[in-house]
Amino acid sequence: MRTLFVGDHNLSSWSLRPFMALAHSGLPFEVEVVRLDRPETAARLAAVSPSGKVPCLRDGEVVVWESLAICEYVAELAPQARLWPEAPAGRALARAASCEMHAGFVPLRREHPMRLAERLPKAPSAEVQKDLARLDALFGECRARFGEGGPFLFGAFSIADCMFTPVASRIRTYDLPVSATTQAWCEAIFAHPAFRRWEAAAQRELGTSAP
Image (tube, rainbow, N blue to C red):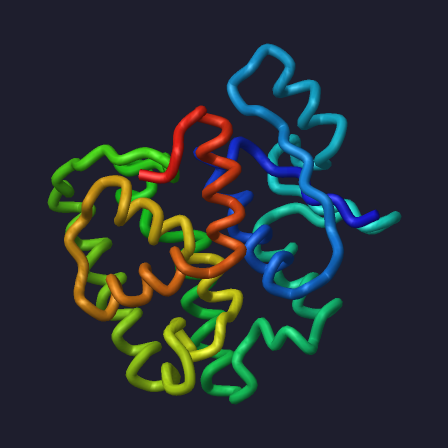
């Protein structure tokens, strides 16, 4: 059976990304949670992931770690899900945006860690404001050039949306100011069945109901 090992649903932004791809793909899979910041966490992670981190996907003898690599693997297993845009120009921009998210937006990630099921309003620093401005510009370009046919960055749901889904949660958790285009995309993410499934699990972990 295909198993995705993840961290806490409320905290693990990197785990959320491949979960979105797998859930959207329609492929059968199970989720196994490795709770973070506990005495047994390091030993548990070492037993399931070569990197000692989550997420990690185990699919028979195939082991894939790192969020973007897992998403790419899922796209290859489920071509019918069309997890990358079909047009070469769209795919190129989607891949560039995904890689930028993987390596960038450091102040936003550092100062506003994912606390998906919580509401913790916090004014952005000057560095985070720069990240938010870049986010608005990038999302505006994606939507303007390739957004026809759906509410996501490239119209239809794609790996680019998976990679930025934790950002949507940060915007909501910390009540961060973003453009109308970015906010509309956030609402589309929040309505996605995969996100709602993950959010419900985060709420159960915290013992809370939907805010």
